[in-house]
Image 1 (tube, rainbow, N blue to C red):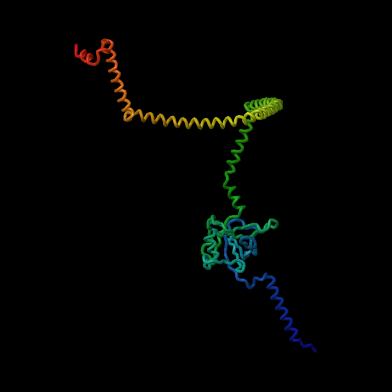
Image 2: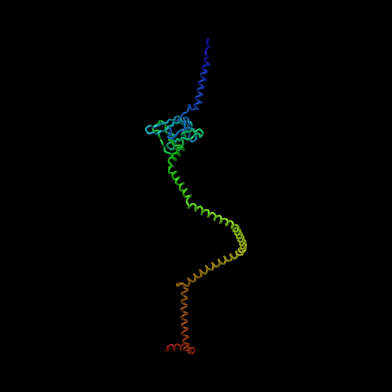
Length: 332
């Protein structure tokens, strides 16, 4: 007779299995089962080797999401290939605040801050890559997806792609040809007789220069001795001049005082000459009186001269008196 199963044991077993399943889901899902995410797409034209599903998406060095899907699209009409990469951004890792975004944070960053996607190396050892969100406002906003249900984040080339493109743009063939021609010209110039003569001339000049340097080196001690002697004599002369300068200082003070007195005398003389010039001017009263006095003196001198002439002709006038002189005057 078979033993009946215990319902309590069965119930406990079922509950334990359910608990283990929930724990496994939470563990394997890394706690993302109940998280909300936003999906975006990026188109990379170059090689995406090393980028796998689950690769990190970083913004300013912080992980904000992961790669969820990748696929290769090949246009058979144009032969153009592009690789859309779908990523998910976790809302609890990247939030947008501010009145400028108005609920369109990612679109605002793309349009106004130049947000772009770029492939970068995540590990140099394994060669794995990641998607980095960088701000490059000077780069063009290159959209390739057309009408999509999710926002497209423009991409920019990797550093390796940029360097390779610059190398491709270089005219390497012309550079190599010009370099080869330059080397041939240098070789020819090195073998020319002119260069050899120039080398010989330089060698001779170097020998002459070495000889000149040797002579200068032998002359330097004498020059140092002469310079030292001159400095000592100059110092001694200065010591001898110093006492004379001390005695000369009072003489300089006296000379300065005499000079001041001379300047004052000069000023007084200028004033005197100006006053004399004023007195002797044509409109001066003193000059008028002086002229009048001179006229009177001249008249008196004429009268005396006439008297003397008369007395020389008539000496008897001393005895005859004034009347005789009058008669005599009336006589022709």
